[in-house]
Length: 328
Ligand SMILES: Nc1ncnc2c1ncn2[C@@H]1O[C@H](COP(=O)(O)OP(=O)(O)OP(=O)(O)O)[C@@H](O)[C@H]1O
Ligand SMILES: [Mg+2]
Image (tube, rainbow, N blue to C red; front, side, top):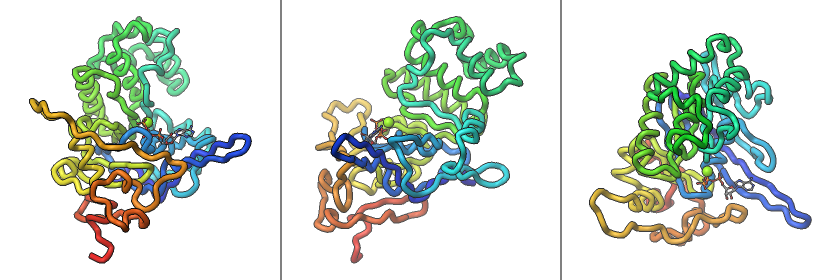
């Protein structure tokens, strides 16, 4: 069963200074399906369009971001919702209870001048007025289920460690038991041991509620631990998508191979393979395959022809002329 589906999506930022109009092709022809109950990972270096894709998945589209074409649908019990056609009010009515969001840099989203208890109280008053009478019990029960101490309720955000603050933010974003949770770099900026706790928490929440989790991170190690399938984005486009074990065992795209090779390995002191160069500026992306200026296997055709995204095996899609030679 499909939980959400993105079709032929193009979402651009358009900014105008006095003389120049600049269009950033942040998400450029992306199609994907997120299946019910899975952890769907979205990978790619900084600036590849991960956050932009999540924003559109949430229907959070406002200038300078614009959806140029394509659609986003959620599956619900009685059919599907066309997310990009919903009004602000309709979006508000499904946010947090049906689809929820843990924003990038979310360790800083908690209101610094409110105790955690008051932040939960404000949230429940706004989204579940029917809970207000038993509000404190609901919150305490939920924190206990997630293994968080209820002493956090009396604290201000700055009194908590980074890892605890992140876990409280995740608790807040999931207390209404949404069926789809979108998490943007939830472990970035945490040290490895704390990261493990946050990964475990996300795993526990998903298993308890059977929810679907979309996990955005540039950290391939986190994908290896948590994701069922992984989508690799580069410069606003899909390079590869596969079931996680398959992706790590037989990555087909040179970009995916680089991302995996740059992972630290246990007891391996060799220097990490870094990817030469940077993702391109997306106001003027490279022609042909967007990865071609950095690809060690670049061929002539890669400079001019965009490789089609092709399913090479069941559940494994890749866009690369090496894998699908045009005359092969
Ligand atoms: N408000 C904005 N106005 C103009 N361009 C933007 C805006 N926000 C993002 N961009 C551009 O869109 C592209 C994609 O950005 P996005 O934030 O989606 O990438 P990302 O993969 O989430 O990166 P990171 O890993 O750094 O979070 C980048 O080129 C970025 O500079
Ligand atoms: Mg981002």
